[in-house]
Amino acid sequence: MSEPEAIQQAYDVVIRMDESRYWYFLLGSVLAGFVMVQAFQKLKHTSKERALWNLGVFMVFANLVPTFYGLLNPNVDLSIHRNLPVHLCGINGWLIALNCFWKNQKVFTFSAFLGTIGGVHALLTPQLTIGDAPVILVHYYVNHTAIVVIPIIMARAYGFRFPKWGWIWTYVAAALLSTSVGAFNWYLNTYHPADISANYMYMWEAPKVDNPFVQDMAWPWYILPLHAALVFHLLVINFFYRWVTPIEALAGKSWWVRRLG
Image (cartoon, rainbow, N blue to C red; front, side, top):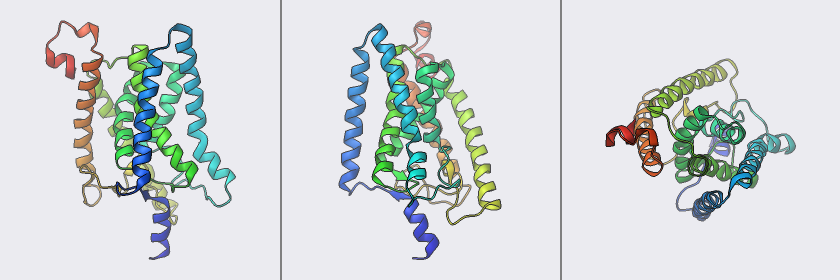
């Protein structure tokens, strides 16, 4: 194995289903998420607001873990090619943390849709882009569980709802954001080349995980199935959020408008 390949492998760690830690962390994440949702639904008034604030503080510190780990560990080299929080799940980690204080509808819509998609796939097909040191491994599962669970808590315990056609707005925002990040990857890799390539949002090369939505195709063609999968996932999430917590204002509308609008 060449030195660049060894460096790449040290960064991009895929956890596969035949590893025991895959199942320990996956089942632990599901159990922790279920307990959190149930716990928040039992809280009332002041206790509920304080709990959300505390959760936001916890997530802010959790989001800082990779950075401080890199700063304090002499064996870790911080790199602008891998350590910036501009993966979609990293962005949503910060958004769900800050929205515990902001309670902003647009932030909820964006993070609920894209956090659910990114978080679920990250838990089912994990790929750690900055290695699998114990601290990073735990952070990976905490962060990706949170970006799925906290929007559910916001919807069920705090009454947040998707706006009409919010899934379309989210798709456009995600497409523009990922295109911008793709240009950022190109800039780093072209003008500031390093031993490891910048691959934020996997807009430079496809993920290495075994996932039916990830096709073995050259850039940029592998991105097209990902966009199709994004639309499909947005529709599914929109359906289930509205099925569980339908918007009262749409109660008189047709079934399709209530579920898809």
